[in-house]
Length: 375
Image 1 (spheres, rainbow, N blue to C red):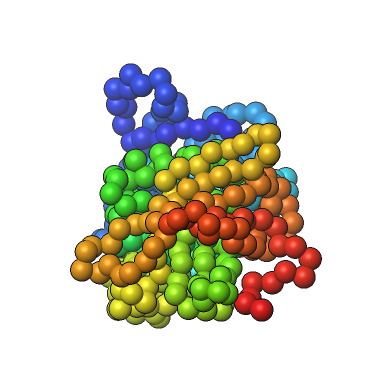
Image 2: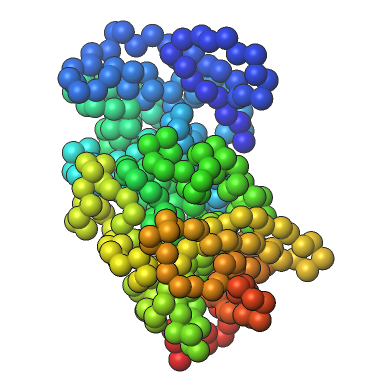
């Protein structure tokens, strides 16, 4: 995997850890008439073509993201391995906010979430892009210019729901705790939302996320659901991120729906603002789930399993409810080939509650006949 950072002008760079810097060519000859946007969109849209002109060998894909996009590289590779890079492929995903897709397009890969273009398609784009973008001076951004040219090449968007534009404000918790059954490929707009872990800044939060990525990237944020019959609890494990324990028995089809801890791009909280189902956050704090956030994870090579620890997130004192579990241990065997099979949730099983204040849970492939239901 090789990468470049494309800039509009040279900068002083004494940091050898950064990828090589490239300077985009002048775009002043191209007309830009959108009154709400910025003409830098033209420069950014041409980065794919300019990358092709570098003449690199053994290239299969060109992947683009913004300066505030975080990729889980291992999962990006897993997704792209499903496709034949010798054919024309344009891969990405839409916005989470319905109106964004209405204003731009449901058929467009949003650039902040990142998109991938197979190298043969990138070469075809390079041959026609300059003439193509001349026909669209009124478009707003770079990603809609790319999509316009993809349309002229006859190539539709192939959607992969693990690319996340995150056109939202607020807290991503509801989205990440109920991640779809797909590899998590990218995160965007992390400068606009709250840190994904509490009581730290966003950089520290991402550094914490690197630990589960290192041990089992395929399983990152994958949700498993199980029950404690004797206690009438519903448990949701979003591996490598959070565990939620609900008082009461709730069906899996409800728990898999993200709770609205976030607002749409237009700062709306109503359910029809989004392109997926959502559910409201209960106003009664004692009817909300008890939340445990990842604090650490280790890998035991002799047993080939991970052990991850989740500690209770302390809500404000006036919202606290009686509860005696402060810690959750989750054990899981890594499965790097998880996405080589048709998608299916893992199952979780409660192992023990003998240690005071702690519950232990096993997460793994569902056994023959095992279902996500209380029997």
